[in-house]
Picture 1 (tube, rainbow, N blue to C red):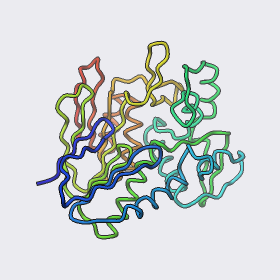
Picture 2: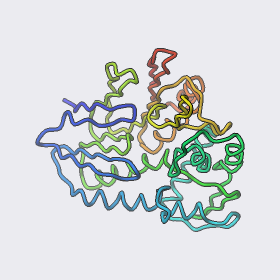
Picture 3: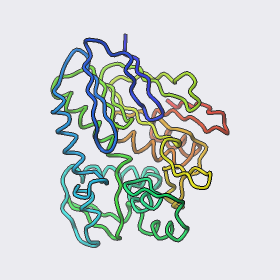
Length: 308
């Protein structure tokens, strides 16, 4: 019988289903927690921590010495040599940016900072002037790629938070598969890969019975609107931004869960779909044949829509 794990809006793994034959490893990475559960096998925690530390030194926006932070500080109109790892994720990000008509845009680092959703925290809603200034230098379209090199056309800041956690899940998953493990869960910041057969429960915003999802050698990522937000003068502003306006996205969605073979891909598409709203997201899911679970907002009584 497959294991049953309960996960929240960001796919938080509960401890149920763990027994004496299951190794559970937990830790901290990329400003969030991670969890690995392996059935009938064991691996050293230090091996996982070492690989995650390597990834964090590439993608962290919190660490000023990371490779991404150094790229953000680099001058414009100059080709910068980057690692294969950073180049790969940037290339995938640009592909998904195009497929989502720009709704997935990791070039919005300056906008993210203005709103206080990144390393820089804000205490109040930013002015229209600050938003407009940040929006003018906030698009991955201002990044050109070529032969393991990157050139910024404007002084933008790249923020890969909506794809790097999923990438990290994929890396750890592939590492475990190469070592012969066949039945395990990897979760980082709510992005999950299930190797073998597992049942995942997506918790609803109104805390009713979770939505059961069966996964077999698949990944799932959820993006939601009520865990990370700025509250100013009694109003909440969600952390997912509309790349067209520079403001937090106003959609009819409370959460989006995307299933894919890659946690990195699921991570990015879940973010994009939250930004675009259910109508455009449903069309995109059908075009790309993506299994998706939408939970509409409170105005729509948290109605659940499943597209397979």
